Image (cartoon, rainbow, N blue to C red):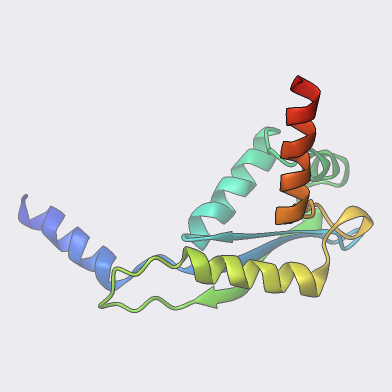
Length: 136
């Protein structure tokens, strides 16, 4: 590996990307989409690009982006995790906990937001049972 590449790797390890919880908020109706990412800058840029190009996976958000215009949406960081620089720890569990906290606090479902409620273990087991019964 050349020296420039080694320097870039060292710099990346010393300055890991910001991770945490974000929201995309509609300024017209105050609806929000809450999400988490190991790389906040990356996910926010990705969401902006997808919305701008008309291909965001959240169809309700995409529809209102088109209807109200980009100027009526803001991208905000709600919570940030600070990684331990000396650790190779996986922060997904902490991010899932923070996401659950913010989803509970903001309740961005239905008329209040673009998120869909996550299915409980009981709901998933019920769906599996229904699928098995329908195959018989």
